[in-house]
Length: 120
Length: 120
Image 1 (cartoon, rainbow over the protein chains, first blue to last red):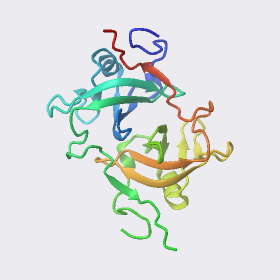
Image 2: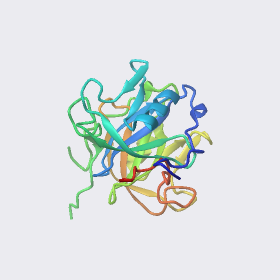
Image 3: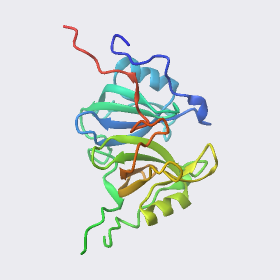
């Protein structure tokens, strides 16, 4: 390892998905909070590596998506990890603002199952 | 909200995916570490809610997968969140052991991009 790169022989296996999009988890590097999940194709992955800002593929708009380009809430990539079977990415970032378009820090701001309370 | 449930009107929109599988991020509820990413179909989602243990759909084996059934490394679900557009889940768990089949605590044990060091 050198020059701030990790193991460059590792890269996501885009071919594992019919649409060649690899799910990417984005975490706040300072709080460890999960901020969002999005998808990268080969080009947005390469742009993320080179610019150290998060780039995704927008499935709804079917276009490259530089996170924060319109909102200003860019995400600076501190480090990036890949999972054991090389089909999921984890980006640790410093966010310039809320990750969610609703204004919430994280897109996961609603629970479908709450913590159990002790009723005893 | 009652009986430990969150908002029951919320549920993942399985129809957003051609294979009806919703990506699910699993986080250690105590350390906030991202442990793994897996997929739920409707049945594994319902089983996860009811049993408060993680159930997924194994894409490689094409079968329901009770995490830890063979390894013993089950994951007790503390709470579960859904994202803003209701197509990704986040399960906060207490793991009985390593999440990864390699023996690592987390499946994300390798970096493709390291933290930048100050060379100044």
